[in-house]
Structure formats: structure tokens, C-alpha cells
Image 1 (cartoon, one colour):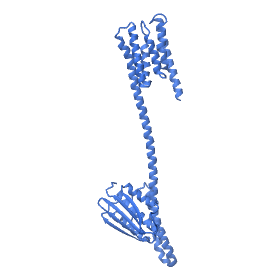
Image 2 (cartoon, rainbow, N blue to C red):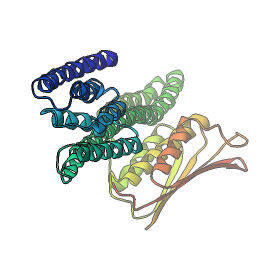
Image 3 (cartoon, rainbow, N blue to C red):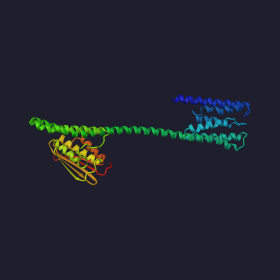
Length: 369
């Protein structure tokens, strides 16, 4: 495509040069500008290079301006137009800048010498220099604007590319958040359902009449789980579906887990943060995950949870007996708690000491919504 454009440009310039050559030769024959064939030679030498003004602007200008040293008795009528076109191309298309300056200086010198050798007054040399320099300066301005437009186009393309990457990263982050939210919801509630199902199975074996209560709990938990999954998938709204909100949300969470068979104790100190603030939501998710992990990995062993709503920081500590030795493998639950804590500028740590597994969370209380 570029080759075709270049060939088309060359053909157009060649046709333009032919028109000026014919017009100059007609003048040189009808109204001679020099003795003998010198006028025709001057017309051909200064006009034919116009055909290469865009493909070889510097070389064409050098050749054309060299013929200005030929003494004349006049000057082609369209010669000034040829000079303007030729040196505008030098300014707009010539590279590098040093070469453009050198060609302009050479052409200005030959223009002055040619003027002084001709019939014009010496003051006309000033006009000859201006005919060369002014088109070069105008062309250089166009060259600068063209380069600026190219840089802006490249910058726009780069910004579009970065925006596309940011959108892809946002999609990936949103997918990870959906996975984490679904894990938090489904993991906790399904653990409750599993515990109640075991209780119902035992009741059916010993006393079928006592199975009604765990079965009802399974039904309620299943409906609540579906509601929470639906809320996660709807814009991932950070709302809680606990029966009670605000200061009582953690109590409701602990009561539900205790009813399902996860023995626990919850201790809250200080004044809880307003409902649905980032830290308050994070605390609820972390407490729920601690209860889920205790019910899943340490069934039958009570978990003690302490939440200290301090003035500047909020601390959550969860401890329960465990048979595991060493640090637990960082599964999705622990990873999710760590991620939530770090997003809010807090710290997260786990440890196993003397058969007790502990989770320690510390977050700044003043994180804006």
C-alpha cells in the first residue's frame, strides 16, 4: 500500500514538473532569458528536480539550486512558484534537521550569487533569500505538527491498549471476587447443612420425632444459602443477609452456627462500627469463615472468638483446639481472610501452639467506604 502511494506521489510530481518545464521552455523560446541554449538549460535544470521533491527533497533542491549560479538576463515567470514548492518540501519532508539547514544555506548562497550575477539590483538578493528560507520555515512547522500528531496518535493507541489491559485485569479481579464471595457463602452454609444432616441422620436412628428440628434447620439454611448466592451474583453487592444487622450481626452469626452444632463463644468489646462499612463487613466475613473452618476441620471442638472494636483498630482473634501440627495449608478460606485484611491495610496471622489453632486479624478502624 505504501509503495502504491509512493508511486502515485511520484507520478503526480512528475506531471507537475512537466507542466512547469513546458511553461518555462515556452518563455525561454518566446522571450529569451539568456543567450543561446543557456536559458533552456536553466529551465530544465531548475524545474525537472521538482519531480523528486517528495521522494528526494534534499537532493532535488541541491541540484536545482546549483543551476542558479548560471548568469541570466531575466528569470522564468513561474520560477518563484517552483522554488516555493521545492523548498517547502525540503522543510516538511527533509531529514535530518542538520541536512535541511545545510541545503537551505547552500540554496541561499546560490540565490544571492545568482542575483548579483543577473540584471537585478543587489537589494534583490534579500528577496531571493526570503524565497528560499520562508518556505523551508513553513515546511518545518508542518513537519513539527505532523510529528506531534503522530505522537498523539501513538499515545492514544497506547492509552487504548492500557485501558484494555486494565479492563481485562478488572474482569479477572471481579471473577476472583465472585469466587471468593461464593466460597464464603457456600462454604459456611453448606457446613451448617452438613452438620444438621448428620444430626438428622442420628435422630432418625434413635428417635425419628427429634429429626424434625434439624431437617427444618436444613430447609431454612438452604433457602438462606440460595438468597445469599443470588445476592453475590447480583452486582456483588456487599450486603449481609443475617437476620439481624449492625451490632447484632455477629451475635446472629454465632447463634446460627451454635444451633447448627458448631460450639462457639463470641466476645465483643468496644463500640461496633456502623453497619455495611468495609471493616464491619470484613469482620463478619472473617468471623463466619473462622466458624466454618472450625466446624469443618475441628468438629465437636468449641471455637472462641473475640472481637475488639477499638477506637483506631479492630482486632479479631479466633482460637480452637486442633490435632494438626505446624502451620495449616493456606486454603481458599485462609487466603480469602488474608486478602480481605490486606485490602483494608491490616495484618493477618495464624499459628498453632500447644494444640491450639489461632487466627489473629488487625485492621484500621478508619477505612473509608
